[in-house]
Image (cartoon, rainbow, N blue to C red):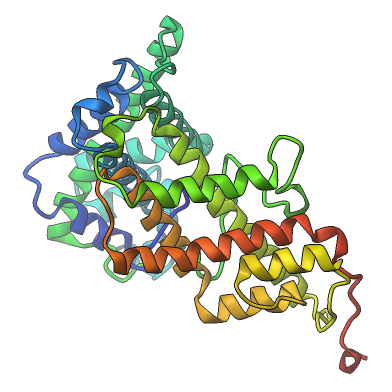
Length: 369
């Protein structure tokens, strides 16, 4: 799934203020929410927009807003107003007698209650999954969701998200004046810089990147096609199914995340990776050609690349490439050069994934003993 990004740990209410700062009401974002949901029921609606990117950005803004809502329900405000300083979660606070003293009025307390209830039972993951599936269906001319029961379920989901948007706007207006939680640090992190949250559509299994349904030539072809599209203008005027781009780039992100997680596992275990892999000459030649350098020790290669750029920067590059593919515009030469670096890294990781059978058994460093 699309990952949370690209904001370091900051105050959630400050970010909420930034999101709504120019809004007189919640209606604009609620209307954009409906634009995304309408994709699932109106064939080829995406073609009425200048590019698929416009709808994709609306979708990403909705994800960001839903994530902020979840962050706010996990805040633990310091309660100076009830006699002693302590930390209590929003969820517990709104249902307690102390809630009235902290929130000052019944309306804002009820708003926090409604918001907390909307995120009960891990509902954030369901909101995110449904939005992604709606976008996929809407971008696929064969994928409209015509089933009546499913349509009713999605309408209920739309109403729930619309209510979340309304709650967040009320909280924005209230906290802009009262700012109860200005000293809070949310118990949540949006950046992937130090921790990768598991995607809801993929597993991070390095030995499962290559399987019977996904061949090396096919994966390299996907990289080439994605690179070719950003050289063209008005690509989506004559092509169908931009939903395939979402799936493709989710896969690209998963490859990078998987290698990062596997490398961190090896590093944390203090294994000695200074061992060249026994890669046959033919495969070694192909690896060197793809990487545009000699790679005798794949994990040293990965380590070098992660020192060259942190994980968040590599993922940002993938995100920017994805948006360029959906933009209907030819990219500037300087941008293409940046994407070439990301493409080479991904292509090399794909080859390494196919060579994992040659990964040596690791031993601990001698100095551990």
